[in-house]
Image (cartoon, rainbow, N blue to C red; front, side, top):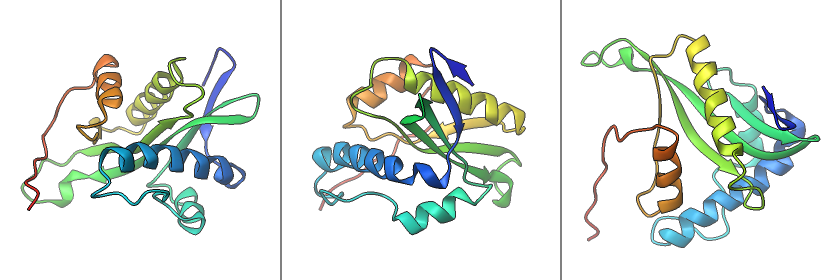
Length: 160
C-alpha cells in the first residue's frame, strides 16, 4: 500500500534496529503512565524474539516506510477463538502493538497502518480486528475512537 510516499509492507530483518527504537518509544509511554507495571527504559521484545516473530506467519508485522525509513509499525497476531469451546469459531486479527515514530505523529501514518491491517484481515477471512489500549494513554484512546474502533471489553483492577 502506498499513499503520500508512505509504503506499508511486511517487516524484514533489516528493520529490527528501527523496530527497537519504536518499541522503546511505545514502552516509554506505558512506563511513564504506569511505572508500577512497566520498567523504565525497557522494551517489549528482544532482538532474538523479533527475529522469531518475523518468521512466524501467525504474527505478521507491518511497517510504514517513507523513502526506505521505517516510521511506524503494527504487530499483529491471529487468534482462533474456536479453540475455546464456549466461543464461536471465528478468527480475530489482534493488533498487539501499533506505534508511529514520535517525530511523525499526526500525519495520518497510524491511520494508514490501521487501514492496511483491516484490509489484510479481510483478505485473510478474519471476523474482526481487536486491540487493547491502556486507559491512561488518552492520545491512543482518542486515536482509536477516531478511526472507528469501539470498546469491546473493559479490564479493571484494584491495586492492593
